[in-house]
Amino acid sequence: MSYISSTGLHQLWLKVQVKNFKSFIVCTAYRTDDVPVTCFETDFSFTLTSAMSFNVPIFILGDLNCNLLQHNEPEPKALLDFCNCFNLIQVINQPTRISELSTSLLDVILTNSKDLITETKVVPHSISDHDLIIATLYLKKPRPKPTYITTRSFKNYNKEAFLEDISNTPWSVIDIFDDAEDKLNAFNALFNQVLDQHAPVKTVKVRTRSCPFINDNIRALMKTRDHWHKLARRTNDPAIWSGYRNFRREVKWELRLAQKTFLEDQIRQNANDANTMWKTIRSCIPKKSASTKCFCKDDKTIANEFNQFFTSVGKTTLEKIKSLADECGYTPSHASFVPIQYPLSEQFTFGDVTYCEVERVVKSLANNKAPGTDKIPSRVTKESAPVIIPSITSIINSSFNCGVFPSVWKTAEVCPIPKDGDHEVTSNNRPIS
Image (cartoon, rainbow, N blue to C red; front, side, top):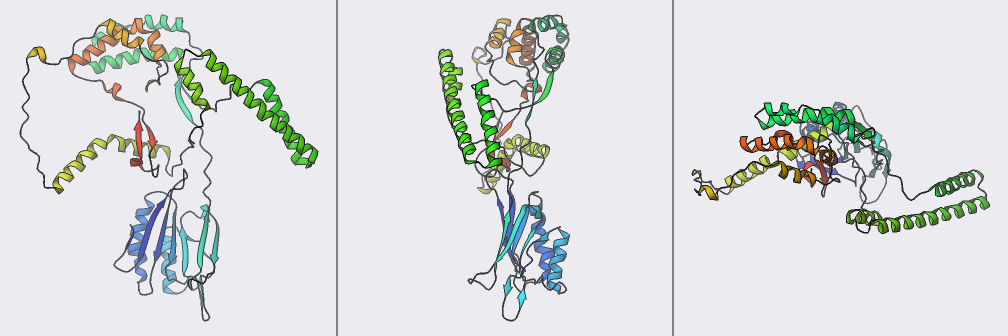
């Protein structure tokens, strides 16, 4: 996009990313007197259309040699028609070049997001006969959207009632099917139908975790502190301000003491539990800021773009390999592959699994691991193991015998983890499932 066109129009396009704010595009342009105004319709329109495909705010600034103080002249009229065509607004209203004989507005700032500009200035200086144009942007991060998660509600879950219902389920229906895919679909339908009655899937709002070491006495002290703060702001009495500062110091002291006591008790009570011990220790270590990322597009569009990128990594890599081979003049051999013949005793084969083997794997599942897309925690699988293990064993053996891995087991929830660079660019993220 950045180039000098054949007509002589200079363009430099940059995509700017400031911390975790939404990105925006800046273009600096220069048009000399001898460049025809038709460059707006040809060269500039082409690059601006490409820039608008990013769906981010655009700011175009530079000397286009169109005196906007003379609206009836052909050159400024062509520029204004160009702005109207792309819904651009020119925000500089003061002359940018003042001489003994003339006053002109040649340097402009064009944008499609005027609401982001809080202030514009024209600053005189002696370096050039053109004054400096400045625009101040309002890049305050918007209020983050509330976070919702889909999970199972175990508020009314009763283990004995669930096991009774799961035991009365007609699991023999699964044996009607021969295909592993059909068996698994039947198993999921039966199991989820029972579990949904005892632990339905719900969408809940994630709330900030409260500090477990704050007791009623500290809450009362914080309430008193806040009351004195409001009173001090209203009266501006030095004595009340002094009282507020004393209450503030007391709250800080009580919080530190309560947190210290709580952590000591946690470490003492979980001396033999390494996971809980390290969880307590990590809570004391300062964490890197994990502020919410801002995106210019809606959530569904972003999710589809990331999904398309992550699922096409293998295909894209293969195309790059073929392209590199063509560039280097390498022609891969198309000779047919002849496998080495091994005795049957040395060949690897899948054998049927037994009830005990599946039971051992199910019992070894960690309770602190996240559930899959079905939102079934491992503890529920363990509780219902005596009833469902025969069906799971049948599904696994059918998968081995048919040579088919069920597609449901290939599905995972993928979270993009930002690397370096603009987090809105899909290639700057790595997938974690």
